[in-house]
Length: 261
Image 1 (cartoon, rainbow, N blue to C red):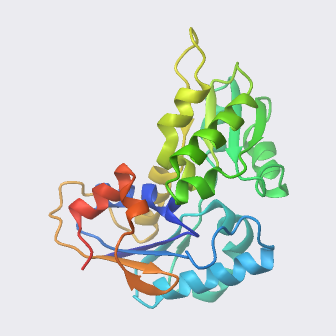
Image 2 (cartoon, rainbow, N blue to C red):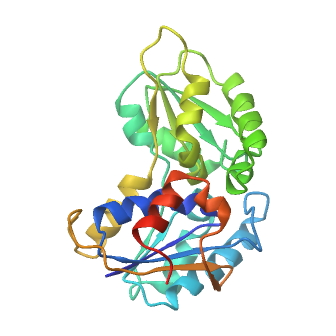
C-alpha cells in the first residue's frame, strides 16, 4: 500500500503521522511546494496550478490514494484535481472540523487563514453544520507561514494576536489550517481561560487519514510491521525531511519510524 499526501508546506505532517499510526506498513509519499508557498495570498487560479503540479509529482510515484492535506487547496482546487486524477487515483480533501465541533454545542471559534476566513466555502460549512451554534471566525495572519518556517517568535506573536481576538467564552476551537495542528497545544494554552472547562481542539488529521483508508478498502492495522519507505518531494524534487519539519513531534516521529530512503 502506498499513500501520498500533498500540501503547500509542512501542514501535511499531522495527517502523515496519523496515517503512519493507522498503517505502519504503508509506504508514504509527502509532496509539498517550498518554491511556491505560501499559497494563501495567491489567486485561486495560481493555487490550482501549484496544487496540480504538487499532486502530479506525487501521482508519478503511483500511490493508491492522495490526501490533499491542505485547506486552501481543498477550497480552491479539489474539482480540478479530481477531474485530472480520478478515478485512477482517489483524491481525499480536507474539510475544517466544523461539524464535530458544533455537535458539542457551546461557542465555537474557527481559526483559519485570512483567505479562508469569511469565504463562501467556510460560511457554507457553518450554515450546513453549525446552525443554532454560536460561531466566531478568527483570521490568523502569518501563523501558517510562521509554522512552516518553525519561526518560534513569529508563531508566538501570531497566536497571541489571534487569541486576543477570540472571545473568552469559547468552548472549542476548530483548527481550520493543517499547519495549526502542529502547534495545537500552544493555541490551547493561549485561548484557555482560567477557571473554565478545558478547551476542546478540533483538527482534521485523524479523520482524513481514516477516510483515505476507507476509500481504498483498507482497515487500520496499527500493529502491522513497519518495513516501509518515506519519499519526500519538495516542489517535485526528491529530498529528505527538512530541519523545519523535524522541529515538530510529527516530523520527528515520521523520521524515526520510517527514515527517508
